[in-house]
Length: 422
RNA sequence: GUGGGCGUAGCUCAAUGGCAGAGCUCUGGUUUGUGGUACCAGUGGUUGCGGGUUCAAAUCCCGUCGCUCACCCCA
Image (cartoon, rainbow, N blue to C red; front, top):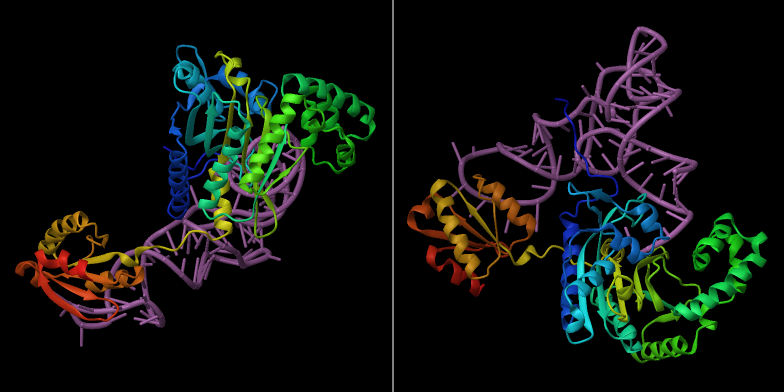
């Protein structure tokens, strides 16, 4: 057998030690804020019918065309690792008959997602997202509230320099009419476009606005914008949404070029960014309204709006701003011991400490006292409990204050109360 | 899928064709039961993998795998 050194698959990563601190604080903040706003947590399978995603995110998107992990079961079903969360939530909404609950239904999720693409800074093949979805309400106040809730999550995490871009991409009627206008315009400027944008003109003209090729920027600036071509309903929806955002005093700006990569969006779309120390703009997440998706996936017509954020991206932003306070082991007590009997008594003592909610660090496998003292010093424990051979047989322990250097011997059953007093 | 950069100890990196090394970390020791420093020692490598050139390859050549950055796109 050849000796192999296993390594993680391309584009996937372990979340260990220091990173777990960031990861957990994001999760608990998301849970806390979502819960406050009346969202219920939903966990859906990591595998779903491949067609759910093909229909859900749109067959012409990159996700459908080349980024899905798919597999065939022994029974012959075609399944896919979920590339995003909304399609699964909508599937569950329909399948579980959530339309019969009081509307709107508010749900949030946290978990891993998968896209098979070339990794790069802040982009993975397995990554974590959290998302919030509100199904069954078409009122623009919900659009504004979703934006506000995710903004609250980010500010609760102490992120600074957040900016929000919003736009409206209309509904079926006004978007289709607008697409024709745009295509006509792009064709007239065809000679000035990059090759990608020539292709986009035919396949997905709205994507033209994602192009970063300098050649296309001038054409982009002059191009007709969707927000100037909204129908009356979409226009008033957008205007109302912005007024609510104004009322919340959120740092948003309108970006008429914001489109989004998934096909299911209608009306309001938005993205969140932070500015890093180097002055770079990092996309944290985004979302929008998707009034047609529930019907498209087999339910009855149901308006909905949602948002999804990349947890690794948020971690990156938090690290960039040094947002996590250092190790909090100062309030931990260190338990040092020598010998078999002392180890045995230590095991029992630790249980008493745990019941008293006193955090304790031990080094049970060690015997040399000096090494244990060194370790206690390093983590900065204020108190150290020492049980040596003598103390073990006498049912006592030494409590030493590491700051003053003073120590006293107390009976084992008095240790907890002594420590509590300080 | 396209194009750049890079693969040497757990980590950061030396060694420019001639004995594979240092710092940090880790484990232990410096009179046997008391502190972060200092000193000493130890663990840890088929130099990503496979071929080729050469008396001799971490080093040069070819291939391959992986990492990384950018494009496409997105979180």
